[in-house]
Length: 365
Image (cartoon, rainbow, N blue to C red; front, top):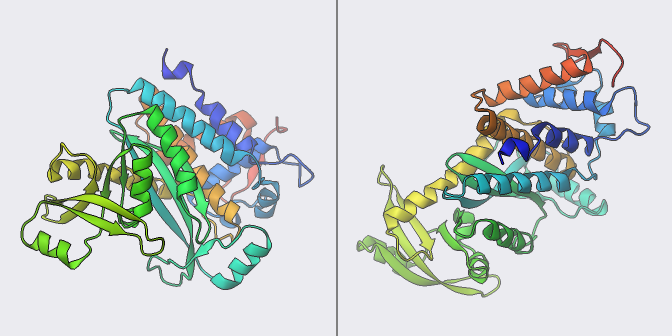
């Protein structure tokens, strides 16, 4: 049975937005499909609601957004369904599970907003990390798990993290689920996870194979590297929790002679072979870069609005990949979004002006 008979891309997109938009008392002049069209128009132009939506107004769209609705749950259901299909259809591919943090900058009074968010029941959501962005006072942190193979990049799950929230309770069950789907998938992670003993302990608990970039620590390890050692073992200590884990570290150089220190429990590979495996982690980095081209910009202090913005970009990007794989299309990502908007406008019998106005030719369906 082909993928086209098992998945309806248009239905996934529409269901996500239908679960995102209310049909309540806030300006019911516009149907949810018209609002979806305007949101996608802002995504394509990378404009905020204020810049890209004049009619319906930015306030109308914000009022109709169900930020506490079921859209995130549905997003994860859709991503999982797509992951299952892709793995089944391409079972011979070598799949990788990549994990990374994405920090989106905040400009304003970080401490004041954290206090406000705590009172609203969100907890402290603004982290002190600013990624050297001028004017940023903090950032929202998003933890993303992706399943990747030969250019296919599926953002299986995303979560916005509170300050001080431990990653393990959310990560572990998802990794177990992914490794049941693809038993030989290798977990890849960068140095942010490479310096955490709990991360390796968790991977050991679930029996995961991994290649993780690790910072070079301890004088004795530096001496080993200086003396030409290609592989060494050492006990990593977790300062805060006193957790301890024994790691095997491989040293490898890329084509530019840049050194990588890679912790791995794959014993039958050389450092160079492990580096080739680790470099597949760039699929996740490229996913972040590609979705930046179709993002819904927002400076909202509401964490749910920030999460919705990320989820919309991930959803559109994943459906674009499916269209290319299923229909062998070669359209660019931005052209794909334009095609969706044009199809919606034709269905709704409307147009979108350059000023961001939705001009209905007939009554909304």
